[in-house]
Image 1 (cartoon, one colour):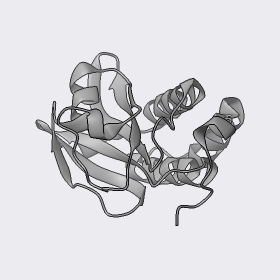
Image 2: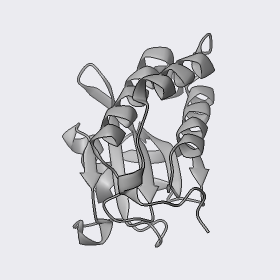
Image 3: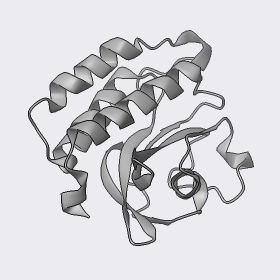
Image 4: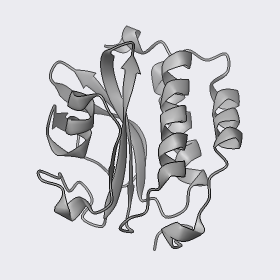
Length: 165
């Protein structure tokens, strides 16, 4: 049903290796859409038990769906709505062990049980989020947070994201 399904306690992340792969994927390319597409695909293919990974970009007061891997997703999310909107508004990473217990959770895929959302920050400005869902409760651990934050920083540093705003 889900690719590479396994207990969250059995996965480990080689953050440095995946970040280096990400760096190689976007090296020499500044287009934000192309870079987001490749980084979402890298995370989706390399991490076990994920049912969605992707980017949302801030346009006005909404996050608008960008490149992703997984089932179709919510197209627009208001700031402060759901996990994505809250992470963007608060400008901080949110790791939600059980999305069913998160007030205001938006269920784009009812199979999702846990989520991690990292805001895309340039200085103090937020311009989007990197989001990942898992069908397993308590799936995301500290090593995942470090990985997703590193990939988000790589994306910001290597992409001309302002051109598409």
